[in-house]
Structure formats: C-alpha cells, structure tokens
Amino acid sequence: MRYDCKPPPNKSNSLYVDLKKSTVNSEEQALIPLHIGVLDPSTKKVVLNSYDHGWQEKMDYVSDLCKVESFHIVIKVSSSGYEVTINDNTYPEFKHRHDLQNICAIEVGGVINLKYISIENLRDDFSEECQLHCEGLMNQEEFSHINAPVLLALNSFVPEPALHSTITGGMTGRKIFVKGMPLEGHPRFFVAFKEADGDDILFQFNVDFDEQQCNINSYESGSWKERMEIKDQPFEYDKQFMMTLVCDNVEMVVFLEDIVLTRFCHRHLPYKMNLLKIEGVKILAVALLPGYQPV
Image (cartoon, rainbow, N blue to C red; front, side):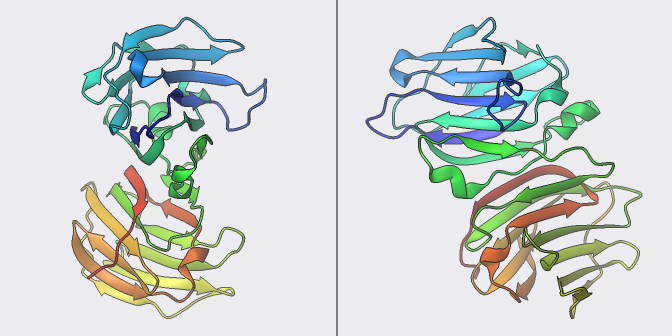
C-alpha cells in the first residue's frame, strides 16, 4: 500500500495510518492490527503499534519527515509481518500480532494533504488471506478533507476475483487505473460503472475470450442497449495488462498500455457513475486519480 502525502504549512499536529477491523468506531470493533503514528515532524519520531482494548507495546523509530515537504509511506504485507517504508527509510519488520482476517478497513487521519492511496499485490506468494486484504479503492473525493479521517472499506471475500467500491462524487474529471491479469477458467471479465442506488449499468467494458472481442455497452430499464465491439481483443490469459479509463463530461476513453483502445460517448451523466465493479480478473492494482481532457 502506498500513501503520498504532504503536511500543510503552519500545522504541527500528528498524522496516522491505521489498518483496522472496522470503520465503525465502537469498543467492540476497536481492533487495530497496525498503527503508524507520525508525531510533529519536528520531533522526528515514528511509532509502530497495535490496539486491542488498549495500546500494546510500541516500537519507536526516527523519521526524516519535514514540514511542508511531500512524503510517501509504503506498507508491504508478508506472512510474518509488515514492512513500513517512509520515503527511503525502511523500518524493522513489525511482526503480526493479530490475524490478517481482522483487517477490513484503512483509516488515515491527522492534518495532511493526502494526494492518493494505491493498494497493490506486491508478492506472488501471498497467502490467500493476504491477497484478499490487498485489494480495494480509495474515494478520491475525500482526500481534501483535512482533519477528518479518510476511511476505506475493503471488499469482502467472494469465490471469484472481484472488486466493488463506491466512488464519492462520481467519475467526472477522473480516471481509473487498473493493473490486472486474466485468469484461465474465466471466459470473460469486465469493468463497469453503475449508479449505486439502482440496477442500471452506465458503462461496461467487457472482455469476452469465447468471442475474442471486447464489448462496450450500457444497461437501462432491464435491457442492454446498442453495443460497441472491438474485434481481435488484445488481452491474453496469464498476461498482465495496464488499463486506464479516463472520464470527462463527454466520453469515456479507454487506454491499454497508454494507447487509446476506444472512446465511448456518455449515455448518462458521468457524476452518476458512483459504483465501480471489476469481476473475473486477478486485480494487481487499482487507483482512482484526477483525470484530464483526452486529446
């Protein structure tokens, strides 16, 4: 997991990153398997700890953070513990004190300008439990809320590769980056945007290996509309791909490996695209970022 942040000027409050059991702040749910606490940057201190009905034994380290300067935090999860890196400084492994199944949410708090969070599978030999909790998506809309914690609820386990996540504020002026790998045994996979409180699919990019083509379409009032087809689809089983979907006020532009694959004019207002679904593909990384006007 990667966090890129910048402390705001003239502020001295601490900031923190918690991998926790729930976004519900109740005594019953108050379990934090990993807490990273960065004190006032002038103190040059970082604390690693866990919380279970009270704070447990903490690990104190020195940081190289400075006020106003940008920094990034990377958390690598292995079967034995967490490796935390802040900028180029990697700290000793923080051993697991709680089962990874208890990590279902991420909380970022304090006074910072949070730029983005990227959640990735960094190792191929993760256990199934580790892989489950290394998939998710951040709501970019909440990044500007200084002083209010940013919460990310990870998707719960399903038998097949899948990601379902809300997108606060919709897709207007944003782009979704997806790094994935199609798996044998899955004849198709798709990336779809829906309106969270309805059944309509406002945009779906579907890769069909049986027909060897990509289909782009929308689903409204119980039926599929006229679809756009891409023959000789470029995806292959067990081969990684990088796809970016860029949304402006007019169209969705799909890039594959930085090359335009297709353009699809909106049939609905893009701000209504507030639920993302990805199914049928191994998800290696997903990021929601500010978009731009495609050429």
